[in-house]
Image 1 (cartoon, rainbow, N blue to C red):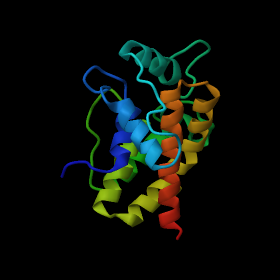
Image 2: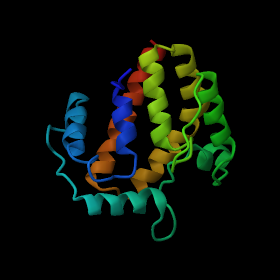
Image 3: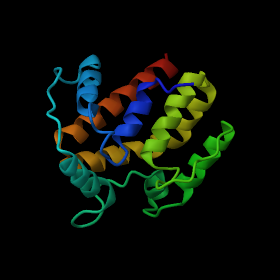
Length: 179
């Protein structure tokens, strides 16, 4: 099955920007933001790859004074501030409930890019019960704090728009779930 849900796109946007991946991503984010009535079409200007990589590092990996907005659930769940704790375990448990095993890679299973991919997959599969559980029991427990830290870090327009689009997509899930 080919990934088609916007959450797969959002996942790619929250991944480390690499050559060959970032081409067209700003235009696509502009279109999605316009569809969600967040910004006028083509409001964002593309960032140079090196600039986007530098901002990604500053926001999500390491910057002056520490990581501005760590993109890992385990950092926020129970205010642990430590990787591979409860948020990590929760994410793995939810993946296992879906019959999935995380692929060994450079990012932890509780990284926002993996969790957004999981949301998209559950939506594509129509597994509303697990989607509701994942969002209510896990994702909504940490994402608001992440979003707040990201916005306080004065992100460039790309990452600010990405956060707004992600919020709007999550709100639409909430509206569908609680309708």
